[in-house]
Amino acid sequence: DVVDGPWDCGVASGLHAHDAAVLWTRFAPAESSRVDIAWEVASDPTFSSVVDSGVRSTDGSTDGCAKVLAEGLSPATTYWYRFSVDSQVSPVGRTRTLPHPDSDPDSMRFAVASCQKFSSGWYPAWRHVSEAELDGVLFLGDYIYESTGKVNPLWDVRDDPSRRATDLSTYRAKYKLYRSDADLRAAHAAHGFAPVWDDHEFHNNCDRTSITDDPARAEAAYRAWFEYQPVWPIDGTRIHRSL
Image 1 (cartoon, one colour):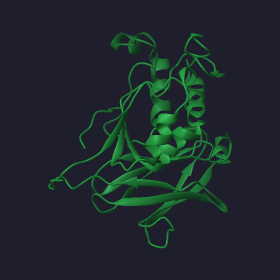
Image 2 (cartoon, one colour):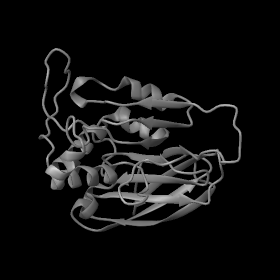
Image 3 (cartoon, one colour):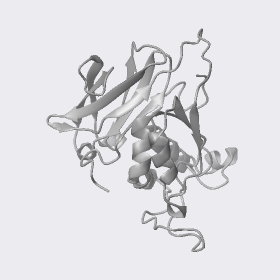
Image 4 (cartoon, helix red, strand yellow):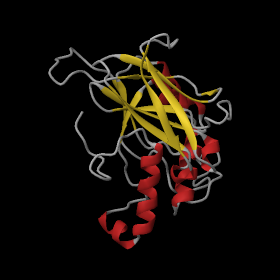
């Protein structure tokens, strides 16, 4: 599915704070050369009222992925965002800031997801998530599976043509494969995500010793995760945080 052209992985945003949101995209041509990507955030889907904007550079060191932190936003407010390189404009994304910490909202509505093995099923659930009115999406891990192919013909319904992920290039390939699904891209474009990882972002049933036994693979796995997920790094590679 290449409907988004050079924006082959679409756009995404991350839940961050009551006055800020993480904005993410990937510009495929930047794999081979440095590119300056303009971004803007607006209070309306037609971008007649832009509230924040800037330029972010990206290149092959992040596989063409670009992340920005849009700040100075209003709490519990919906915004729209997009990226551009010259006349090439990305799909439009929508995101929402969190309530102010001192506020007391009557309710909040989230989708919760995990364990989305590419070969084991299609993603109609993500299509429904993209159409729902939500405050955000909590993703609890196993965004990718490091394995490859049709593991079990009884329940695997589509091929995973990528290689087993063991280094940076193969972990990156996994994220690109998963984002090739139009329904997953639509969910990212519609809502801010708060993701954490589980084991398959590294390898099945990994534990603390897995990192010391194979530090190069662990570094590649977690680097690719940070490149492709709409999260702003805090305290190195720490992923637990309070919202």
